[in-house]
Image 1 (cartoon, rainbow, N blue to C red):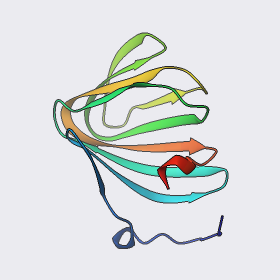
Image 2 (image 1 turned 180 degrees about the vertical axis):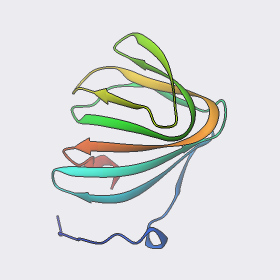
Image 3 (image 1 turned 90 degrees about the vertical axis):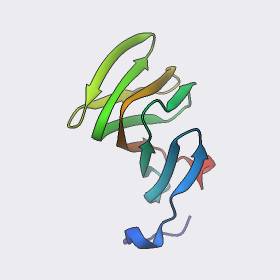
Image 4 (image 1 turned 45 degrees about the vertical axis):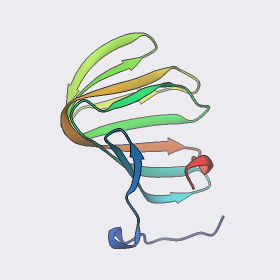
Length: 110
């Protein structure tokens, strides 16, 4: 994968994933990726799992996260950690945005 050090926001596309969810890949390389995920109120990040470690930082809004069967409501300034292969998902209670960090890079997003 080509190494880049700068990722101007205007150069990155906001991809409409449907059902009130949009995603923008902000920066990435082999071992790390940062992704903005925008949610409309009521949008769902369906339960899923993947082999990547993931941290989600709530930039704005309010979300009900389910991680490994446990549910918590989180708001702007809160974070989550998902270890590899744990089932997780989210329901957006108030429109907002997450910053998701993955290691290694989610090549399936590119």
